[in-house]
Image (cartoon, one colour):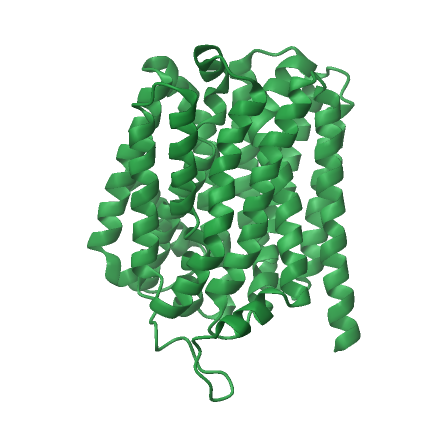
Length: 419
């Protein structure tokens, strides 16, 4: 997908949801382009597993470990990235992370063995760690509460569209060239986006020292002790666990649903890849619905809970579909749709839990939960697939999703009781 296309998408979506002003549209266009690329890279390798496995002669677990290495270094880097964003501003940190990811994907096309690929994806994860703390800090500085839910939905939409784009593009591109060249092309596109961000970097200024409003007369640059107090407050701990469990499940779906559906439903791998793409497109559409809902209600706990419970039901249906193609298609589409609907409310719950001047730390901490889930998911579900248990794979996915609701309900009850 050309760089200009997803920059344009961010601009168009900003117009559709009535985000007025050229500056705001540029902000959303640039951030959305970066978030698209971040998610694209997360799913750049799994569609190629069926090509990479025989050539490198490794197990499914080993391939899942490459994706997990990316998630692990993302998790390690997110809290430091959030602290740096709150102290020094998001602009250069975001652009630097984008550049690191791009270079790593470019070099991945020149690897000759498994461990080189593993190392490069691990470094790319460090670059990826900056996106959530930097993006949300910029959005919080530039946008007011009346449109924040819809703005977050655009941000999430473009990220999920990145997943869909990777699922749609990577395997055909690898067939047209080879899997290494496909990865290098992704790196080249990312480099172009980095250059565009650098040339328009003024739109990414989150006003460090201006918008980080002092709280109670104190500096908004929080001390290490203050940062720890913010991160380990009950609402943020609960939201971090919520991110962890749902991310573990979504990473499992993205990494191995193609393999599982080929086994359970006896479909061709290209068709299974197309269904995964449809799942991600449905997720992208769901997040726009969820953004509208988030701006219409204060019951964000309820919206997030219903969304993930419905997703759990759809995934469970995949385990007991009896080989029926209609069950596979419906389960994959509905699981994506419902998760997308829950996402903006989840992000607003995190923002509500963050004191002024600590958006970077708050989103860095909760996104660390997401990255830990992304780390666990591919290894755990790769191990299940090595056991040749695709039905158990879907059952465990559904359980992880359903259990995540407990964290949201707990947070709601504690908030009500303390009010």
